[in-house]
Image 1 (cartoon, one colour):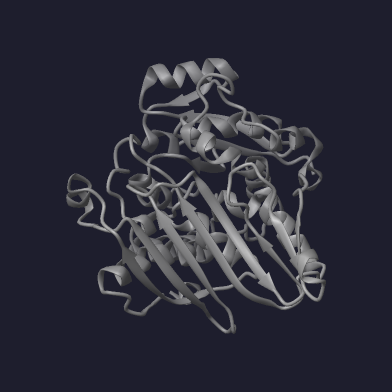
Image 2 (cartoon, rainbow, N blue to C red):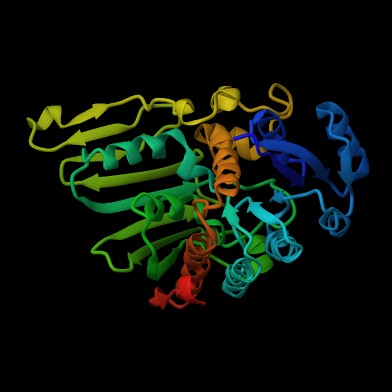
Length: 374
């Protein structure tokens, strides 16, 4: 297809990672950028040769040439900026999470329905090479019947800016909820979560959230499956880990304990010592247009000196960035729902929000809204 989507990127920290990907995607036109700080805006604009620049998001939304916005602003701005864009007639891709309240998640799902515009939450894990590898095993039938799913996201957020200090762990849970829900396209029905341990007093008072670790069980709708996810952000000794594990009747996949080591496949009915086997997950660049395949292997912005902290700690997000951009652009070109779409994104995001509520209530079972029918 020769059609091109005019894309505007909002927020040029982590967001700048995506500029050259859109510039080289055969169906995208990297049309405009938006950043409140004019010096940063011009620095990036000059670096990548982007002429259309905005310091005011509301002014950008008035530009009739823009088809879609990719939002990479701070978490507290996601819902407001998403709703404004949808109502201005723009398609939206937004970095995680969708919103910080269940009410805003509902509002965004409704807005996509009212406007006919598409929304995609840019969840890196479900386009990382490890996830794509397990998805391939599942689709080939090599896992057998999936029996259980598990994921974690542990990260030391000390020294991160703005809204991060003291954040309840489950308020940023999509990196571990996404893969356990996304593999079989399951819908979380209800959640129960426990808090464990205590962070320092100066951090507790920011969000009135005391827990060092939050661990949740998710029950999936119309399925015999449940999943277990856990999160920590402060005062827990652990190397960065963004893991997911899948246990099947024929094969199971387990994440390595140490970043950079190989994951393990367990195969049933072998002699005990032969059951586990380390495997190397292949790259899935062949899923992409040739022009952007090289982006699965490395970061693209300030690679040597000033890579964004989320990219450094996140181990490059598993080569997911070009896959995310390609899925979003392809969905718009083909006039289909992206994955994850609005209701799926709302479901994944709300698991975390309601898991924290459950932890505050001592593990109470909390049911999620039916986002498909709000």
